[in-house]
Amino acid sequence: MATTQTTTVGPVRATLLPERRASAGLWSNAWYRLKRDRLTIASTAVLVLLILLSLAAPLLSQYVFQMSFERQDLLRAYAAPTLDPPGYLFGSDEVGRSQAVRLFYGGQVSLFVGFFAAFIQLTIGVLLGLIAGYQRGLIDDVITWFITTLNSVPAIFLLIIFSALFTPGPLTLTIVIGALFWTGITNFVRGQTFALREREFVTAARTVGATGWRIMFRHILPNVLPLIFVLSAIDIGSIILAESALSYLGLGIMPPTPSWGNMLTNASSYFNRAPWLVVSPGAMIFLTVLCLYLIGDGLRDALDPRLKTEK
Amino acid sequence: MRTYIIRRLIYAIPTLLGISVIVFLLTRLSPGDPVRLYTFGALNVTEEDIQALREHYGLNKPLYEQYGSWLLQVLQGDFGKSLQYNRPALPLLLERLPATLQLAFAALVLQLAVGVPLGVIAALKRGTWIDNVIRVFGVVGHAVPTFWLGLLMIILFAVILRLMPSQGVLTVGHDVWDIPDRIKHIVMPAFVLALAGIANYSRYLRTETLDVINQDYVRTAHAKGLPERTVVYVHALRNALIPMVTALGGLLAALVSGALVVEQIFTWPGVGQFTYAAARSKDYPVIMAGVMVASTLLVLSYLLRDIMYAVVDPRIKVK
Image (cartoon, rainbow over all chains, first blue to last red; front, side):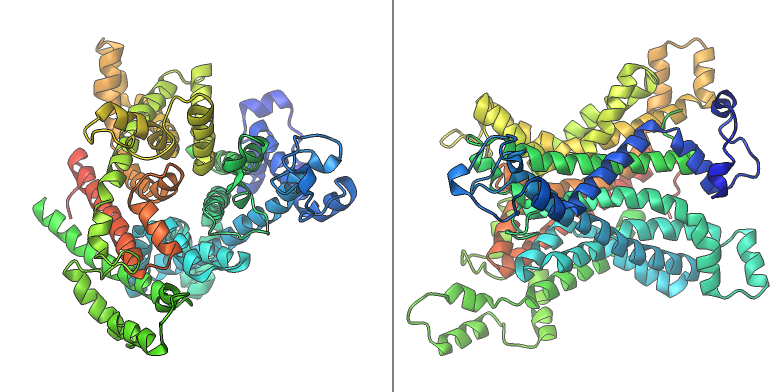
């Protein structure tokens, strides 16, 4: 990629003049700034590590921990964290299952729900936002009304009722979460589109006969895209939080499928015997969400320095 | 101003109608049959009894008819009887409303009392370690799962240190007006509920204060020789607080939503906990009343936000 090859400016000058080349595009400039943001790079590394560990859960449980996630050992329940056997790295739970293996499998579920639901809401949000902002009129009114309505119901109430009444599986739950949380993105894209459609380049595109769809996706979308990335990083975090709360209440991901939330459901009652059961799943959620929020902040600072929080 | 409020109240009607449709469809399309659920295992229940019960609760009519008659009753404040308690659903919920409002109000006060000073201090001390600590807190406070924090706090303060009660509003047997006891009970849930908001306010106010500090009129105030305190509190803070009102709406929503989880952890007898229990036992009238009460709270708080916004910032023209 051309962007990485051209960064041959000396370090001293570079720190003084972050926007060093007039010809550098948005993404190349953003990448340039991002590379210098150690906190964001570190958070990304931790997040990637967590994702890789979760993806590798089957391999890890087979070769490293030598224990499947449903294998029970009642005689060794509530074992304290130990390296013997390696499966009890984070201790064992009330039926002697390996907490470590369950954490990584739980990570698969929690991360999948977070990323996939965010993808769904992003698709809905961007599409409806572009249409409402560009077409305006009746369509806009209907979409706005729908957003106002959905925003006026506390989302967690809807989720809890839905889960209690329909007992959905992980995939259905993900889709429902995605279908409930898109209003923020839609509002944002709609607002941006509103402003952008009055700009000269849109008029120019219309003059040469571009269709509405082409203008929306080829001309307006690329201008909105940077901040959508920022929003989506933060959204994935919020979704993981919502899913874990729901699973904790016994309504999200159902046991025996482990998720970071449902691993905490009973953990508090075993606290006297096994405090690590309360600590580790929550710490995983916390770490993941923290990384995502930090990445969101870092991306925002890199893509739009005007919004930078430190001045 | 009055026309503005009336107009906003009228706008709230289609929103509430939309909510009622969503909730009604959700409860009626769910697979479980409440009549069978509540007669399950009971002896001497014949198929005819079940049909009679369904007829009694109007569950055998077409959907739109059920919705129509339900809505007519709701407009008169009648959500039907709870299947579980055999008492009208709305009064059951309204009995729990004060507890939720207390909790939400305590959390809101905490958010403002802690979040605003944190943000201002961070902005005034920008670049120092104080600023860094507050900024880290601004992200961390947002990323902590509330229910986990609640569990850890119960374990630490109630189980290990035995300093705080872990559940309820009041020690059993204590006088209803035992205020110190009530405060002791509300501190932990209110803090857990408020944390995300505290973090949010501190971030928000830091940015706003920094913006305002760099404005010309603040420099003028400094140049006039006004003491630092006057500049900050009279000139800067007042203007930095204006956009805060917008953030208030989202935070109120988070309070109402978050209250459900927090009430569950601390066994706080509020609307959220009651609705959760009703959802688990498929008590339709209570579920619908619960969501409508929570949503009405939310719509009202949005309304309050918009009115406050118009009051605080005279530059905003009332449309």
